[in-house]
Amino acid sequence: MELEIKDDHFNYSKRSQWLRAAVLGANDGLVSTASLMMGVGAVKQDIKAMILTGFAGLVAGACSMAIGEFVSVYSQLDIELAQIQRDKQRGEKEALPNPLQAAAASALSFTVGAMVPLLAASFIREYKVRLGVVIGAVSLALLVFGWLGASLGKAPTVRSAVRVLVGGWLAMAITFGLTKLIGSSGL
Image (cartoon, rainbow, N blue to C red; front, side, top):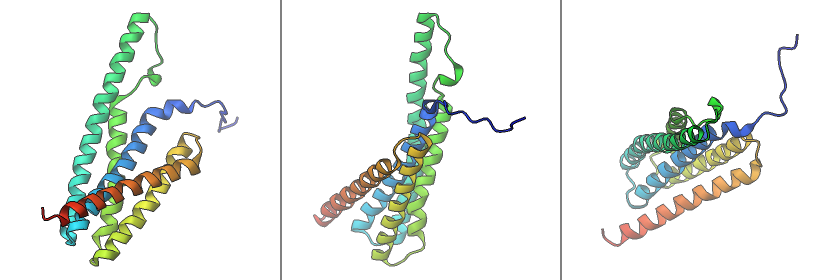
């Protein structure tokens, strides 16, 4: 008897709910936490301020992402259930959106993503080195998360990884630049 069954017809779209939430959460955790830390780093070289800002961003972001995903997916579920009722059709239970699964995937992946810049910055006292290490670690993680999301969905990996990387760089650069500009204006 064959223990492993190969299914070439696996429907990868069934992964889309939790995969979308996980990719968004990880990317948002990386980018928003790193951007917050870069923004604070643009005007204040103190490691404690940078780490506390990153930690506050991690907690607030993970909570916000989980609650946002739960509410969003639950609204989608309500609409789909109402449509099934109207059409008097039975839907596949696994095809229906799962708000708790999306919330958990989003919060967990946000936390994992946010830990990258926090850990990268935590042990480096030298300001410029710390900023460089955060950018390097976050860049590597953005590439990995972009590749992983595309791989799990059987989508083009290079294009996805580069898109995620460039988006993260833009967010960090804009946050750093605008915060530096506002900070230098005497506010």
